[in-house]
Structure formats: structure tokens, C-alpha cells
Length: 339
Image 1: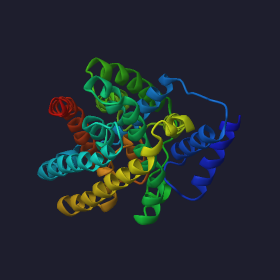
Image 2 (image 1 turned 30 degrees about the vertical axis):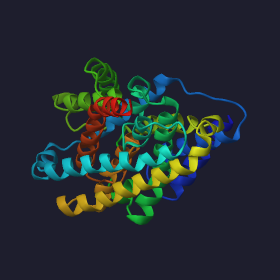
Image 3 (image 1 turned 180 degrees about the horizontal axis):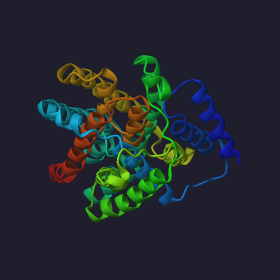
Image 4 (image 1 turned 45 degrees about the horizontal axis):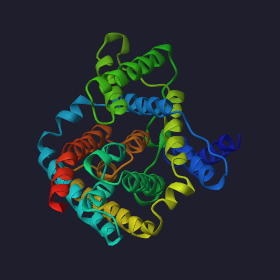
């Protein structure tokens, strides 16, 4: 009951302030406040996080514009170069973590690489890194990004959300409900079958795009209450992940970790401005496209502000794929070099 009250109260406050995706960030902040301030431990079943990711994927897939995707043709070289450079610089910045005793080059690299937090946490131990340090610092970066995003979108970029941004809330229809349910169910299965990175998000995105080509789902929208449910499940899961025990696990490393995170966010923001100059997209779209983590929140925020969701999705997915493809090679090279 306390957790529910916190989430409802924070969501209402963020909505009144006009900040983007208030339910998502309300769940995040409410869960975080509960996890750090309560002696009781509350966990959200892992399958709810998967459902939440699937709903985000469907919401984004329903917004994909193929004409916009085709127009990105000349921008791919700039996107690829900036994605590679930001990844390299994030790994270099992460080497500051080696100032602390016992932190190996591979642990420092995996803990700081920009993006793919869940993927890095999953493969860290197999590739010779300390998975405890990698997991805490990766999700700490996601937390910092999510906490800063509403302020950046509303106050730095002065972006409007919801109706003010021309984003009308989809009316609930049985067709919309069926579309969302089918896309989430098929997408999660498809993502796991194809072994996609972030299988729930990407699988549901692909399934929603495919289903939208059927005449029965022509111009269909995901009902707003389904979107809100997905945002809430995502926010709660990330917020409750941070307990005092998890932060104590990296102890003396915390100040250095926060410095590294600030450097990575600053580097990505600077290259986001460069990407805006090179491609002609808005600075907000470029900022969201190069944000180093929190894929689901980034896509939800882009949709809520009426941004170029197709561009943001494409750039984020390119970097995510680069991270997951390069991680095994980087881990093996650093481990052999250390030996």
C-alpha cells in the first residue's frame, strides 16, 4: 500500500508539472524511494518486466514511419561513426575505475560501455568481468539518465508533451487491445527464438510492425492505458532494483563511478549535438538518440513528445547491436592482454 501510494503520488505530481511519461518516472521514483527508505523488500516478478518491455516495443512499432526510415539513407555514415566513437570513449572513460584496487580492465570496460545494461550484466561473468560491479554501475548509469531525462526534455529543450505536443491519447478499441496483446505475445516469442538483444522490446517492435500491415489493423493505435501499464512496470522494476545493499556493494567506488557516468553522459550529449548538425534532426531527437542507456524510457519519451521516433529507434538499436557484438571480442582481447 505504501509503495502504491508513493507511485501514485509521484506520478500525479510529475503529470501536474508537465514532465514526459509521468507514470514511467513515477514508478521509477516511487520504487526508488521505497527501496532506499523501507526496511521491507518488495520485488516485482521478472515476467512483468518482460511484459512492460513488450508494451514499449509495441508502442514504438505502432509509431514507425517507413517514409522517415527511407529518408535516413544519407545519414547512416554519420550515425555509425558517432555510435562507434561514443562507445570507444565510454570505455576509455571507464578506465578511471581501475584506480580502485581489484578492478580489472575488462570489468572497467564492461561497467562503463554506453548502452546495453541488461546485456552487459548477463555476459560479464562469462567474459571474465566482475558481474557484481558491472551490474551495479551499469544500472546506476541508467538510473542517473532516467532521473535527469524529464528535466532535460522539459527545461533544457523546452519540449511539450502529450496533447500540447500534438500527441493525442489513443481511444481504447477492441482492435487496439487485440493488436497490443498479439504483438506482445508474438513478439516476446519471436525475440527469444531469434536470440535478439533486448528480445522483448525488439521482438514486440518487429511483430507490431508486421501486424500493422494487415488490413484489420490498419492505422491502429495502442490504447493509452496499456501504454501506461507498460511504463509503470518498467519504472517499478528499475526503481526497486536499487537498495542500500546494492549501493554498498561498490562502496568506495561510488564517487568514481558517478564521475565516469557524468563523463559518459556528457560525451554522448556533445555527440548528439553534432549528430543534429550533420543530419538536420532536432537537438531533442539527437539527444534522445545518443542517450547512453534506458532504451525503453528514451523511446517512450520520444513518442510522448511527438519526436522523430523512427530516427531515435534506429540510432539506439544500431548502438545496442554494436555493443553486444563487440563485447565478446573486447572481453577476450582484454583478458588475453592482461594475462
